[in-house]
Structure formats: structure tokens, C-alpha cells
Image (cartoon, rainbow, N blue to C red; front, side):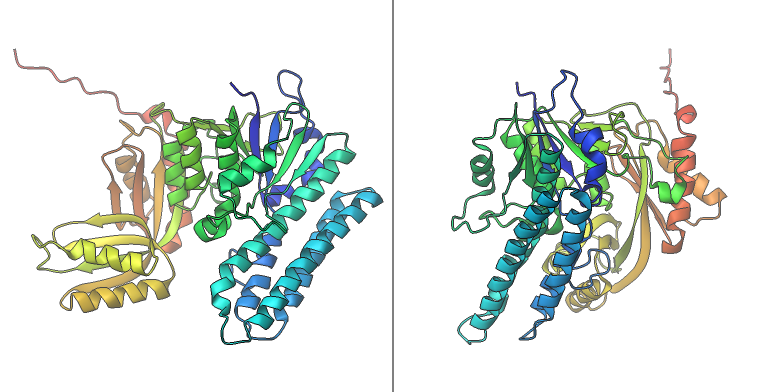
Length: 481
């Protein structure tokens, strides 16, 4: 059995890599070994936003400006801005002038190489025979790889200066004319790495024939991380974050009220991903689960704490582990004549699929089908129009709501729905709807969007902070004698 781990570091944490040299990278395992660890790194915090677009606001970066441009070079200025930020980060992290010079040269070569590609492509597509939109995903892949290559290269320099035998492993396919699959790209890159004496620092982006950005957009680094763990049969996969995986967002319920989860399973991780609170990308979780590799989510800045272990255990102690919420749109289709007639649900699903609207949850009865979706209002309006054309007599209604969920590996006997509804009612929060599937892993409360944070606080207090002493005792049923 292998004794190495594969560990991922996110972008915001990467920006503080200098703080992690002694506590994380130079931390010896129980056997006193520095090595047998593979680190997969994201771009430094904020860099991918400058290269692509802001993840929260949508403000265009170099890619967004290039995509919207016919001829002007505004995208080139944005690329310069990204390069300046990248240089500032490695300039802060690398204290030795020789290391900064190496990092400067590496960054210049990558940025100018990408710029030349975009200028040539823009010139080529000025002729009618070539269409720029056919190349946009390739451009997005190219720009994505710049951030990860820069952070991995700079981190390897930082660790080498600290005395570690760190090795920069570039999966971005820079100047590589081949088109390998992801697994082939990983196998080639790690083929001659000696894990017992080297510490690979691997780019979170990997160029491959499948197209990671096309398939997973900004979630590609976790997919790469999971595939490396599976390909190398790692003993454990570890994600280092700036915080512990906690029972709620500490910014909402307070840092002193939240609790570290400690242990949970991939089922709970999937529920969290569905609600936008990703412990790990669901496709990455699937890869680890199928490979039988447990995942640990650790706080990079709390090196002595083991963090939270996520494995394939089917159940655990009956309790609510996490309370989280997401603003969604409720798409409600009411048709008095729906009862007993087939086809309504299929038509709605086809419309949602056609307009790429993500379904978070769903509820239905005899004459009403409601989908709670995570999408723009514009996209959902298009779905609304399509459904109205298919069923002219139906009443289609869209409104903004919040979905707040209490999640746990095993909610059997916890009465989370009843206790949660009572707690919300007692604090004056109206519950629009409540639902729980037959599998006791989550309970969902639909409430007004402006009450989401208050509802999370109330449910956390009732179901997590006060949860242990209120489990329902099993009922004894006596047969008649």
C-alpha cells in the first residue's frame, strides 16, 4: 500500500505560502519524513479573476475583454495588469534576488507567449474563413494555465531556497504539441518523480484532450488533484483551506458558535456542493470515492489540528452536522388539469436543461411542480416563456427565495424538520415550504431571501448548538397480548 498523500492548496491560501513553509511544507509525518507528499496548487488569490473574469461580480479579465473585442487591445492591458499582480506576489514571497529573477523571467516568457498567440489569432480571424468563437475555449484553457504555472513555479523556488528538494511539475502543456488525456498527462509528468526524496509542486490546471475548463470551468484544479490521488493510489487526499470545515459559516453565526465537523462522509460533501458550500468539487469527490481514497479538509494555518475526515462511511452518530443556505429562484408551474396527465414534468426538465439551469431541489403535488434553481433571472425567464408556450393554461410563477438546509450523515430520530420549523416560527421567520427525502441526510427550509442569514443562525442554534440533548428516544411498540 502506498504511504504518500496528495494535497491541494487553494488560491487564497497560496498567497500566504511563505507562512506555510515551516508549518506545512517542512512538517514531518509520524515517521519523521519530509517527503511522500504531492502538492497540487491553485493560482495565487485573485489571479484567475484577472486572467478570466471575476468569479463573484463577473467583471471581465483578459479573457472576458478578448471575447468581447473585435480588434482593440484592451485585453492586452488586462493581461499586463495580471502580470503585474503575479510579479508582485512572487516578489513578496521570494526573498532572494536570484529567485525573483528566475520567477520574473519565467512569468515574462509565459505572458508574452500567450500574448503572441492571442494577437496572431486575432489577426487570423480578421479573415472571414476563420471564426474566433471556435477558439474561445482553447484561449480560456491557455489563460487558465498561466496562473497555476506561475504559482507552482514560484512555490517550488520558495521551498528550494528553504532546503527542500521541491520539483516544479507543469501539467499545463506549454509548447507541447501532443493532446494526451488527463491520465496520460499525469502519468507522463510524474513518471520519473521519486516521491521518497522529492516534493512535487504540481499545477492545478492540466491541458488534456478532454478540456478541463470546458468540463469543469473554475473547478478544474480539484478535479486534477483527485485524479492525481487516484492515479498514484494515494493513502489520503488533503485539501488545505484558510479555515476548518465547520457547522456553519462563522461570518454568519459567529466564530465562537461554529464547531469543526471532525468527520463526515461523501454523501454530506455532495449535499454541500449542491448548496454552493463546496468542501470539494462533486466530480473530484466521485473520483476519490470510487478509488477508495479518504479526503481530509484541513486548516492550513492550524497545523496541529487533523481537520475533518471525509470517507465512504454510510452513517454516523445521528445529528445535524452543518447548516447552510443558498439564494435560489423558485420556478412554480400550476395547472389545474395536471393531475393524472403525463408529460408536464418532462417538458419542464427539457426546458431547464436546454437553458442550462441548475436544479438545486424540487417539490411537486397533484397540480403543482416547483423547481428551486441556481441560475440568473434572465435564464429562468426564458424557461418560463417556453413552459408558458407549451402549456398556455398553466400559471408559471418565478420568485426569489432562499433554501436553508440542515445536513448530516444520519438524521434518523433527530426530528430536524419539526424542531427546525418550531425554532423558525418562534423567532418570527415564516417557512414558505419544508421538505425532506426518504434518506435522512438533509432537511430543507424555503424562506424569504432577506431572512436567510437569520434562519441559518436560528437553525444552527436549535439543531447544532442545542442538538445533542434532544435526540428522539426510540419508541417501544407493545403488541396486544
